[in-house]
Amino acid sequence: MDNHIALTFDDGPHPEFTPKILGLLAEHKAKATFFCIGREIEKHPAIFKAIIDAGHTVGNHTYSHSKSFGFFNTEKVIQELQKTNAIVQELSGKQMNLYRPAFAVTNPSIEKAVKKLKLDSIGWNVRSLDTTPISNKMVLKRITSKVTKGDIVLLHDTSEKTVVVLERLLLFLKERELKSVTVDQLLQLPAYV
Image 1 (spheres, helix red, strand yellow):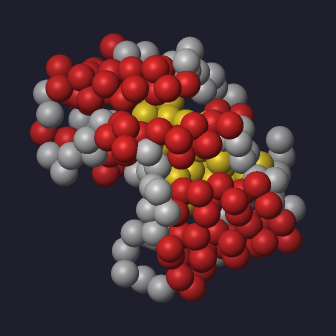
Image 2 (cartoon, rainbow, N blue to C red):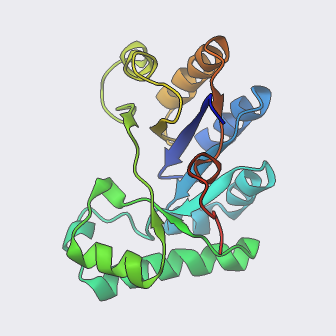
């Protein structure tokens, strides 16, 4: 357990980039956690199943990932999370326990919804900025300059930039003898109820 970190990917599944990421993870025998958007799971159910079949963990990243998510009342947040959970349960038979807030937004309404649904909210402590205009090199440097055992790294399976960065990052982790495991394994939480 000493040398474990958790790579996490938000906003998928994506038809082009998620399969590439799954390929790299398999090649390096690394496990990760994918916080999926319900609407994207509906569009790409086969890719979603491929994530699970490869032994990775999936978590709830809301249904719509709406820009106004922070303004939703508790009822609406509950609906978003339940809708995604229902889609996943139907596709995989799994009832997700892990949740990552959209845009890292949390407030009393969201907290109440998460508590009511008894979900574990998962943050991160290494933010890659892989969705910003900064270069691949800078994204990689942001991660490698600070990543250490026990860290949770935030990435997104929605761009070529992340694929390029991940390839180099997995080599870096191997050199440092750091192993990527699922977030539930790292934090010793149940991934599914």
